[in-house]
Length: 333
Image 1 (tube, one colour):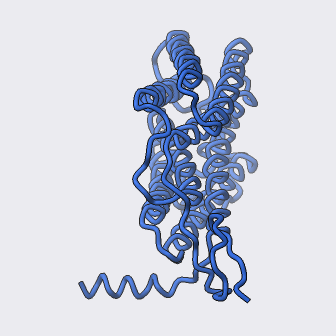
Image 2 (cartoon, one colour; image 1 turned 180 degrees about the horizontal axis):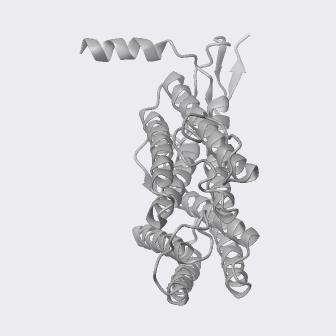
């Protein structure tokens, strides 16, 4: 009990940044978690995955790139830049947690999501180190990307939590629709996993000497495409059900965004396959995958309601009271 009291006293000293700053931090975190997945693909398609061949150092005895007889400077700096970005993302995740702990009134769900984000970001850094230690073995690279997608999903949920309340979720659509959306999310997860296998068997390993997954890429790509068609079919079914039950307008907005991103992603994937997997399309495809996750997570949050966000206390302007709009205040004098 004394330890809990001491911990509470420490967090009580944290500044209350206010709900607007907290939402901005959560938005920056979402952007960062998306960008790091894209820059990771740049590392891979440029063959820079072992530009820094040690971890956490860049090279044994040096934290930064140095002249190396077997490595181009550009590949070293691409990998090193990606690592620096990871450090920045870790700092953003830490600020999100501190902001959530300092918010008044404190919101346990928001704190939990911020803590999960920071823990996942630190785990991602460790997985990156293991990937380097194992010379970019395909399954480590695949795990690295999959964890990124999970962090993108969590970032969306955390951003939404800043704009909604903490009540038990109330369904805005029949339970069957939520179940269908849950199954569609599972299909999306399988689609992304299969995409990592296609990449693992493809030409872009991150380093020219890294062995590839020894499975026929044509078969993997076909299964990947069939999962995409299954996902699209479920989205079409969802549209008919939305219309039948008169789904809320915000659910329709989330749906159209998701459908548009999925169609664009499918088009990129087809062109990518037909043109021999050019590097720029690989990066665009990873960006598309992250945006599909963002849109799917956002749609999921539109199917339930947790009530309005609690009015945050602004310590810098104590003579203010809630206006009745979420997170906004009016002066009392």
